[in-house]
Image (cartoon, rainbow, N blue to C red; front, side, top):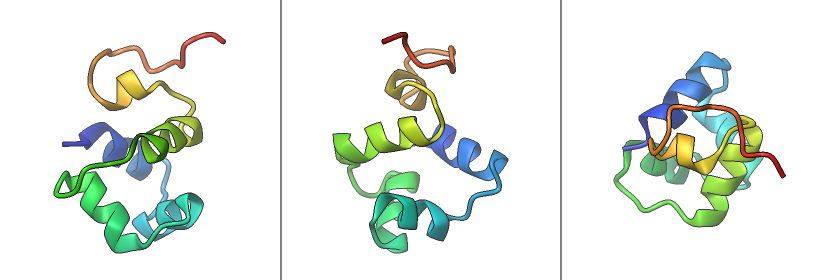
Length: 71
């Protein structure tokens, strides 16, 4: 479900454990978000967008523009 999140993580050479640590969650919880077996809270999605300097729309596949929206 969140293929872009996995791709961004892998392209950045970040492990699932490292992502989970950055988000202050368990690695298994993060893994379940990434594969889509568990719904991802909006707060986590926003934090991931901040980590990768992108928009939540890009992470959700609603746009192909990776840059975040201007403030």
